[in-house]
Amino acid sequence: MSDAPRGPRWARWLLRRMMRSDSLQAVFDELEELHEHRVAAEGRRAADRWYVRQLRQYPFRLAAVRL
Image (cartoon, rainbow, N blue to C red; front, side, top):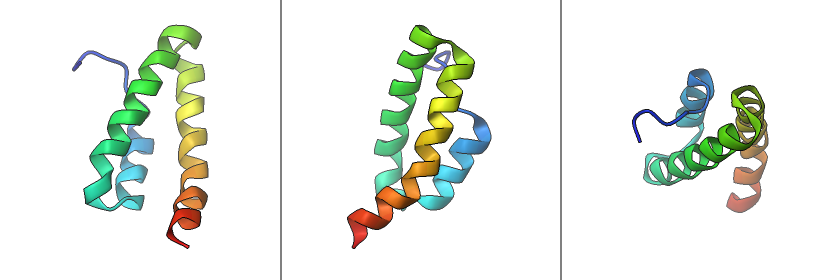
């Protein structure tokens, strides 16, 4: 899967800063798989925008789960 499309580099960097390491790989794997499907269905730019929207919403979801 090394040639598979990946989310924007800066967005992946930001996600690494927000996540604990024990959960990080599972979240990365899921986001990357969904991003790959979106690239195939909607194109790279639309998939990248979706990826960024997921990251913008993630801190709120994480806070809700931790409460």
